Structures are given as structure tokens and as C-alpha cells.
Amino acid sequence: MLKSKSRIRYLASTLLVGVSLLATVTNGAHAGYGAGKSWNVSGSAGFQYDDNVTTDEIDSTSNLSDTAAVIEASGSYRPDAGKDFGLQLSYDFSQSLYQDLSSFDLQSHLFSGSVEKEINGFDVGLNYLYGRTFLGGDDFLSLNSITPTLGYSVTDSWYVSLRYNYQNKDFISSSNDGRDAGLNSGTIDNFLFFMDSKAYLSFGYQAEDENTDSDEFDYFGHIFHVRLKLPVSVGGLEAFNPVLNAGVKYSDKDYSSVTSSIGAEREDERTTLNLGLDADLSRHVFAKFDYEYINAQSNLASSDFTENIVTISIGARF
Image (tube, rainbow, N blue to C red; front, side, top):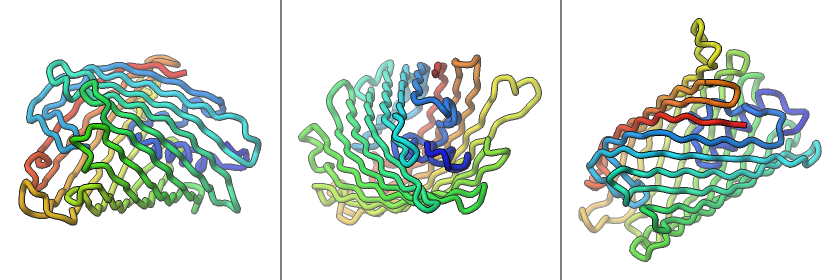
């Protein structure tokens, strides 16, 4: 990280790298962990209950509940690039293994690299990501993504970020060829830091346009989101550094062509609520609780559902 950056810029920049890696900020309660080190690694394993197992990428809803083992691992390395540049290389792995609905087992690999430079008080960055996903044990989706970013500290506690993202999606199975797509999106994020920068509130807007090989999947969407990270300072719990993470996201997608199965243009609205609590059990060991609620409304039956997901995991980081 550039030596001239303030602590606010460092925290905001670290969080935004996580966003570019398709990881939600609400899961990054310890985003500043390991600051000053050139590398960080972490891993966790846990239990998940899902009352309506789904695969969003192909509009597949089981209408069934199941439990799953979940495994996550990640690592990042920041090589010394001198005082003018910040570089980072990262890898993230996740795996869900359902007890009964094995066709919904999801495994993902994300490889990324980012570069950042401060120019006249602005943080200018570029992130490239390659992702590979396996569904039910079969090769499922290949993803290439590039994201230029521009950030600026408006005040000592207010950081603003602008991002453009292009994604190329390649579904491996020929049955999903019509979903192969190019997606363009633009995002503005605001981070308001408080409690000596240990807590933040972020809010933003994203517009995205997806152009698929089959016209019926083309859409334009609007996404609004609010996130909160808040350390919990309650009596004897302070020794565990508990951190509360909460978020709400609303999306509205209008499809531009008639969906053959319903004989009309598809319309989707979705509200997602996230609530999480992270705590340190020791210097390197942590525990996490996450709850997610999804209310998806659509005139396409397979995309009209509600879902509750509860995850409890324990892990270690170094």
C-alpha cells in the first residue's frame, strides 16, 4: 500500500478489492487484518441450512430444503512494487456439499490481480479476475472480469469510489449456450467511517446491462445497497472482538425480449437482507454466523421465491 495513503484510504481500498473479487463487504469484518504484511491466508469450514436451494445463474429453484457442509479458503500476496504502486495477487476457493441435493453442489475458484496508484489525491486502480465454477461436480461456468476503479477521500471519514466492470460469461454446457453473455456495469459507492475507522456505513448504486447470446435473457438492471460494519463493545465480549455486519440490497431487472415459457417480457425484483456476526476465539482462530434472506419476485415461476440461509463456521487466518 502506498506510504502516503491515509488509514481511511487504506481501509476503503482494501474493502473495494474485496468487492471486485465478487465477495461482499459484509463478509469482510476483518478486512484490515494483517495490515503491513505482504501475505494473508485464511480458511474456514462450517454448516449451512438452506430452506430453498437455488442456482441463480440458470434460474433453477428446488423448492426443497437441505443442509450442506461449506468450505472456504483464500490467500493474497502484495509484492513490493515501490512507493508508487500497490499490487495484489489473490486466490479464493469455496465449496458447498449438500446432504441430499448434490446436483446443487457448487465449487468456485477465483484468481485475481490488481494494481493501484495514487495520482493527485485520487486512487486509480485496475483489477482482473478469472473465475471457474463447477455445479453438481460438472464444469459449469467460466468468467473473465476487468474492473477499473477511481477513489477519492472527500473528507477524513468519507471515501467515494467509482467502478466500471466488464464481465464475459461462458457457460460450459451446450444446454446453457444461450446464457453466454457480456455484462457492463457502473457502480458508485460511499464509505462513511466512524469509531476511529473501526466501523463504517456504505451505500451505493449500480446499473448493469447484460447482453446474452439468446435475446430472452438480455436485461437492464438497477441495484441499490446499504452495508454496515459495527464492532460490538459490550462488557466482557470485547476480548473476542465481535463485529456485526448487516446489509440490504434491492435489485430491479427488466428483460428486453419475450421469455418463451411465459409469453411475456420477464420482470424481476429482489430484496436481499444479510446479517452476520464474527468473533475471534484466539489470535488466529475465528467463528462466524451468517443469515441471509432473499425475497425474489418475478413473473417467471422459477425465479419467484423466498429463501432463508443460515451458516455457522469456524476458521483460522494467518
